[in-house]
Image 1 (tube, rainbow, N blue to C red):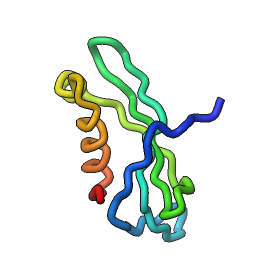
Image 2 (image 1 turned 180 degrees about the vertical axis):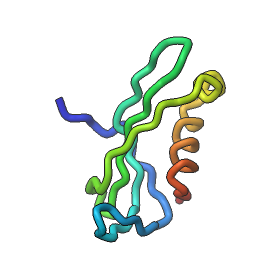
Image 3 (image 1 turned 90 degrees about the horizontal axis):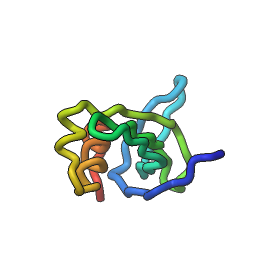
Length: 90
């Protein structure tokens, strides 16, 4: 089953290199959050171009401290991934 996009987040354009090819990231798309109750969560996301086409799939496993800080505020996850990828929301 293909991942569906939970949300596209527009970001300031940033050039990244994947397999020696330069791409301009224009969006971050969150695709899946898998929760291990009271411990952690794995966030799956894509870096997308300015046409919302996937450039690079990625994932990040929250530390227990990050999981505990998440609480009920989903913008915490968005900001965590934006910071990790050095992207700026617009």
